[in-house]
Amino acid sequence: MYPPSMTELRIRPYDYLVTGGAGFIGSHLCEALLRRGHSVLVIDDLSTGSLSNLSVCADNPDFSYVVGSVLDASLVSEAVDLCDRILHMAAAVGVENIIRRPVETIEANVKGTENVLNAACKKMRRTFIASTSEVYGKSNDVPFREDGDIVLGATQRSRWSYACSKAIDEFLAQAYWKDKDLPVIIGRLFNTVGLRQSGRYGMVLPRFIDQALTGKPITVYGDGKQTRCFSLVDEIVECVLALMDNDDALGKVINIGCTQEVSIGELARKVKSISGCESEIELIPYSEAYPDDFEDMRRRVPDVALLRSLIGMVPEAGINQIIESILAGRSEE
Ligand code: UDP
Image 1 (cartoon, rainbow, N blue to C red):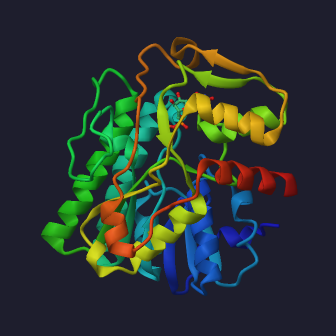
Image 2 (image 1 turned 135 degrees about the horizontal axis):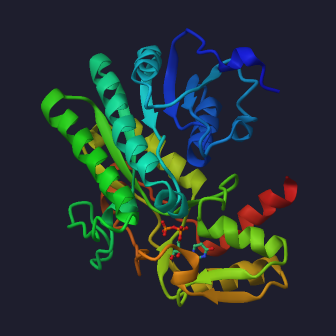
């Protein structure tokens, strides 16, 4: 399905470069862009992404990908030269992955983004930097506003290296905007879910769905009272693309997420009841689920006033609808 020539960087102009395009959110962005008639080039090192995520795009003549890393500055620069706009999605993903591979996390997030911003600036390419709600750390000041304080834990706890490295990305992107006029937009993505998301790197909903579909216990960590706000990837993609077309978004840090809060215990109960599975719900202490130094956050809710004021929409799908749509998609696989 993937001839070797597809892995050669095809020299032609493209509308969009999607770094991390073989990942979960990146691949949905590629599909949406091609549907809208844009041409797309992907760079992905396949560390957590997979070419199978791009099977819908592979046959499109306006699509090409190169297997390579954003740590490769000359590759990034060559790719950026070919493309009008950049969606920088390549980053370390998944709490489990991050705490087990801290060096790769910090390097991918910091050096990778530096390479992208540097190359974008040489050609003044409009760029979207995907950041994360993890940046708010363990702040209790919910809902989180973009200009609110961030509260991170000790540097001895590797989870916070992710938040910190993405915060550096945000500082750097804003510095490029302020000092060098690079047209850049920073999106803080809240928990995003949907088809093709893997549970392998720790993400809770695909794990619960896999557990339900295989009749295994649904593993709720801690007391299950911690909350998150989940958004369907299709809605996140709509928001990112709308922001890219909005001049007022330039230079800004913008929350992108849904405001409907659900506890992880409730999420497990919903997955169980909507799927009709026989799985038990099992509470697992954090000490068994994660290495010793792990800290979780109790609540994470976005303030979406800025997003709404910029693009007139925010992710709205409720958790039942989200679970139903993922289960329906999975049953078609
Ligand atoms: N979680 C869980 N069971 C799992 C995986 C995760 O209870 O099998 C919990 C995790 O401890 C956290 C929440 O679900 O409280 C969301 O975890 P995820 O890794 O999906 O995202 P994040 O913590 O980055 O919001």
